[in-house]
Image (cartoon, rainbow, N blue to C red):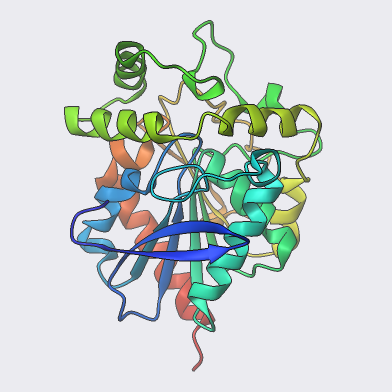
Amino acid sequence: MIPNSEIQFVEIDNCKIACIEKNKNSNRLIFFIHGNSGSSRMWTKQFNAPKLSGFRLIAIDLPGHGSSSFSDNPMTYYSPTGTAILLSKAIKEIAGSHPFLLVGFSYGTNVIAEMLNFGLKPNGIVLIGSSVMGEGYGMEKVFAQTDTPSILFYNETDNEIIKEWFTNELILATEEDVQNLMNAYLQVSLDFKPALFKAAGEGKISNEILALNKLNIPVCTIFGCEDKLININYLDNLPFRVWQNQIYKLPGAGHWVNIDKPEAIDPIISEYATEMLTIASPA
């Protein structure tokens, strides 16, 4: 769990969703959604960021990840749609009538876009290392072409391979950062990746680009210039509204931008959240 935070569980459809929280007295909410084979601990630097200390921060563990429960129906609840249904219900229950922001990383950006199909109405969205898809934006366009297989696409069990992979992917990370990502990876249900990629292979993913477009709010979109997993230019034609009419591409950061460059990304999230949640607040 993230230090100096609290944990609560929201039970949705017999699945316990773990939510790590900080600053519970604030009425300005930011939900953080991690990616494939991660956990809420990847947001530790954001939870400790002075720039974000005025917000109620809530990091969610996806089902089958971190402290959330494993599903006895993985083909349903580990699919993008199934996960989106669970998380949209959990977020609605936690947020109540308060305005809130969604911050997603990698596969977490897909989950956010899928949640828009289930009545979730965020006041702002931040996409970090986006992998959102839609018509004309398939996997071949989203993912970078590389000869090195990604352990995010299969269940690797060799600790040394896992450690070496994360060490090579992160740009400015510490040994602790690598260990946190490695520990999260090893916690994930072995049913998760087969279920996720079976759903993807069968086309059980919505037009996420269209869902973001229909939301009709400016989306803050951030990539790391040294990202080895994602083609960071795939959204350059701006298929949905982007905040400040630009896509942020931060030098010296890889796919895990929030870990590599918290000093660059935290002020962006803070400024965007302040603007979007102020607009949403009653006069």
